[in-house]
Length: 389
Image 1 (cartoon, rainbow, N blue to C red):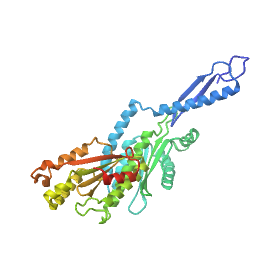
Image 2 (image 1 turned 90 degrees about the vertical axis):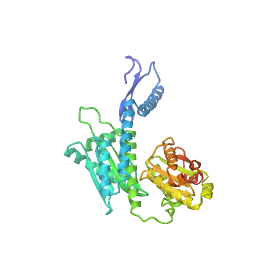
Image 3 (image 1 turned 60 degrees about the horizontal axis):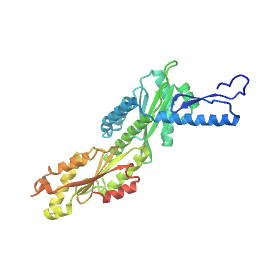
Image 4 (image 1 turned 30 degrees about the vertical axis):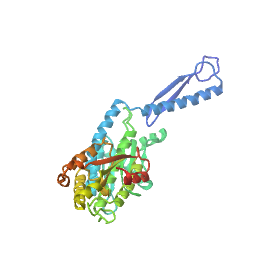
């Protein structure tokens, strides 16, 4: 602040307000022209503070071309990572895949992975590009944060830390930013993934913080790990008659309802989306009456097998009625109807369809629902499963 000309009342004519978001962004300088009363000066200072906060939020909300490029690269990496992680059942193998994924996504950071093993304890691995001394120093801080994440069952990040607290973390632990996200199975914590960015050396550019994109990426990877662990749990359990459809071996409606409820909880926990596809063979009852019940059963068995071959291992597939099926696709985006078109083309290849006098009479209809963008609650989604298509 600078006073007015000599001899005049010493009110500030220039006010500097820091632009502070998840990291220092700059300084806002505003000049007050003309003499003002003390009350006006106080109001001017409050106004400058609000303007600075608004500008900081606006700057952080903007995504420049480099950020878009980075987002595209991360999405490509995650698509490749998902296939490897979500089909891994052995805890040690899952831990190795997870650590490798963390290193590829956050190459300059200390990354850590904890996954509950078969004995009930946590398996642990870490990796970083820094020296052994820096690694050990950061690990001491890491163990405290990981324990807090497990005990609280909540995400712990440096986003939103007061500047003085962040400066203390940098000085004491050599860490400029961090994020820890627990792996949750139902209400239990089955692991935790962590990322710690090292502080910059004195005299160099400030180290980057943990952006929203970074946290979203870590959150999505944690989701993949939880899916892999739940798949392993289901693979080791004997299927109950109440959840398995005896005709096709797919999930029955009761088992599918349970999977949808699980996925709704997971989507809300990790702020993730999933896709639900409901399929129906057009006029199936009429086709079954014309061609006999044996044909109807044979067709549904064949279609169920084709459906299984055209989904990921992590997807849940169910027969929810006569000639009606559903597919739950975790961590999936809309595909513009490509999945429905692919299944429609498969109908003509089924032996049960080729044997009909008029194979062109068999058609497939379907609808896709995107949670939570299109359907707000799990109850509404379950209701649509029974009535859609």
